[in-house]
Length: 228
Image (cartoon, rainbow, N blue to C red; front, side):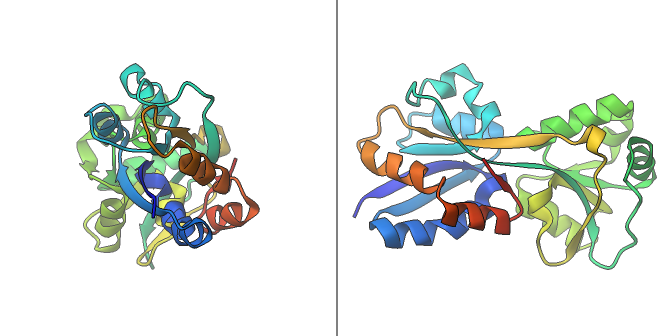
């Protein structure tokens, strides 16, 4: 059995976990994932550790040292997803339909959980800067390590609101607030690439092709993302 080690963004974890058993049954290959934030993925890709492919935000591939660990072939676009704001299940949902309404909701919140060092977190920081509230939000932001930690903090009442990729909030104990103001919406796109030194190039190419099939697309949609 061929075992493929895949570096993947935390925001696409649910989709990858949903697709993995179908791919494994269809091909006989086994997938082992390393999920992380953008800095963690860059660190892992450049650490010298062995891996076979990446399914990661474009921001990871923008790092020259990380990109050098992958084939020079064009990236395989997999999926994208926008930002979302969520509250604890049952809590009052603020109005965030416009830029001004979102700004008010953010300023009124006592605390916010997110992952500033991730691709989505960087976009959220830029959003705060665009709204002119970066310093205020920095003071009330609870920094979390991964998407599950954002959800946990929100569901437990540790934090009042959470902001991250919208699909992450399709979880028990939290509720996504909609609509997100379109003029402020940002998207994180995930793409696949073959590791430059993988001994399993054919199997990796088969995996990336599988991620583009209708069956995979349906699972990606089910997990709240938009297939490429």
